[in-house]
Length: 176
Image (cartoon, rainbow, N blue to C red; front, top):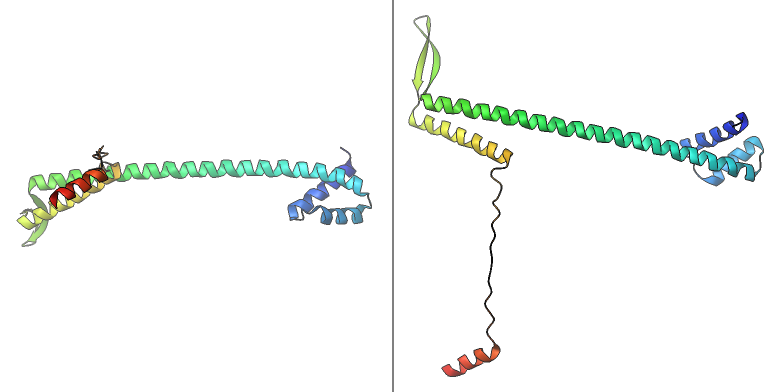
């Protein structure tokens, strides 16, 4: 491709990139700048448009690829985050079960200047609160894992034959 031809195509490409995409507008600028015929402009216009189209397709493919990769990464992050959340919830449930099974918690108290660990046994209402917390966490875990999804049930409905009008009239006439 000659240097002049490259210059012409490059000029048209620059106009297209600026947003000046109308044939008439680009042609008037082109013809006034280089004093070439419309026929010559058409030849360069077609080549520049083809190059511009290819360039836009490449850019769009790269954008799509980049977007797809970022979406995949986001999904992977969500899955990892979900798995970590489930893990921590299971750990909390395990810890609460151990506390309930022991029936007490250890508290650090200072008695006469000495620090001592003392067992504090649960009162009935505290034990009930621990069980409620445990059940809430189990419910949440079941919901996250999908165990609380509705169960599909097959139900069949049978419709008896509708009574005929004649039968209804006869039954009413017998009562009169």
